[in-house]
Length: 110
Image 1 (cartoon, rainbow, N blue to C red):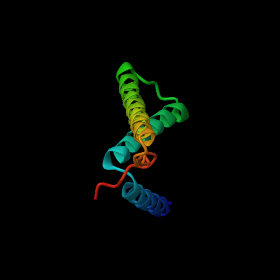
Image 2: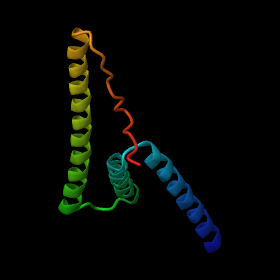
Image 3: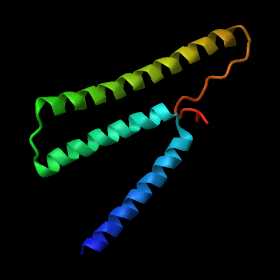
């Protein structure tokens, strides 16, 4: 029935929103936004595969740009971590204190 399907859809959407807020409390808004972009790409690709929907050049370009942005973000985060570790190694060689920030989960901004 339509009412049953609407109830299930509402429950799923509410659950999605709750998980989204829990994630946002643990990561920066930028990381959350990038995760959302990846989710959209995955949903689009799954729909294309599941429903055998033809994909045009504009769709493919948009998906490639989104994935490229996510890859670039990951590379920058990795580079920041390596740089922080190198700076701490220099400090440790001088017997100075240094703490390498945990960059696996971004600090919340709020």
